[in-house]
Amino acid sequence: MDIERENHKLEKRLCREVGRAIVDYNMIEEGDRVMVCVSGGKDSYGLLDILLKLQQRAPVNFELIAVNLDQKQPGFPEHVLPEYLGRLGVKFHIENQDTYSIVKRVIPEGKTLCSLCSRLRRGILYRVAGELGATKIALGHHRDDILQTLLLNMFFGAKLKGMPPKLVSDDGKNVVIRPLAYVPEKDLARWAEVRRFPIIPCTLCGSQENLQRKQVGNLLREWDAKFPGRVENMFSALQNAVPSHLMDRSLFPFETLRATGEASDDGDKAFDEEPCAPPAAPSGADGNPSWTRPVIPITAGD
Ligand code: SF4
Image (cartoon, rainbow, N blue to C red; front, side, top):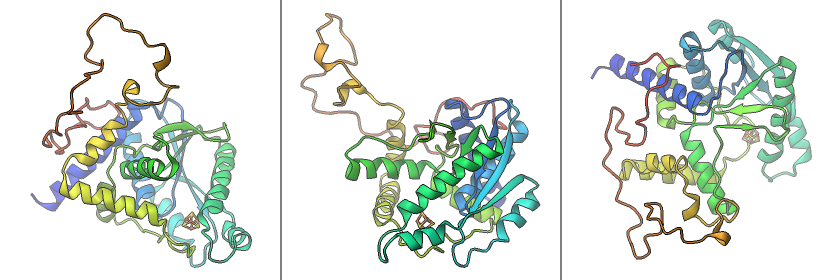
């Protein structure tokens, strides 16, 4: 298959998956003003790019405003985003806040900067969202970010907790959405090459990469290569929780449980040692058995 056809298929797939996530979680509604956080990385460029495409064909009217927070990291090429966003013709706002100096001043040498840095960034972006009258804040986290977060929370936080596709922010004032929730990172990496986004490196702050997240990311990539369908199944599992078969007493009334006398497939199969069937071989247009729900109306359609 020639490159152009491949790229066209990728574009359609990205639009379809972003549109599907938007509809599934009712992320964008009529009249929304969506603040799209653009960092200069491949994911946020991809998010803005696909949202602009969907805006043309969506059944609802919504506004997009790209926002970049220039944290004054040394060497940050401050002309790149304004030039790119200007060329796109999208409304944008660059917020200049020197969080880099604050973080460097407050955090002792050798300690990780990220937690204070992201706290400051979050607060600033919430404020900017209020000032711009944004009704939603869109972030560029994708499927692999969500799965990595799930595993990290299990390994280090002892919680069955991923990254929500839509949630009210911790200050209670904003609705945060993640329209790339269904999109695999490899598709965004490829799309960034196709579109030649002017990527700004994310290492300018000099902070070390989050080693644990990197390791979990490598693990997922390894599984994806060795066991096709496993990562997709893990992701689907997030949408198919069975509280009666977990152990959270706040989600299921274990204490008051009584026999009903009625047979149920959801009941305990007491001596069944096989917890589930082996995963089915990948199938469907994208080789993805889990993503078979109907195409949503916000997309261009196939
Ligand atoms: S990597 Fe750098 S810019 Fe990113 S959160 Fe950490 S300190 Fe901040």
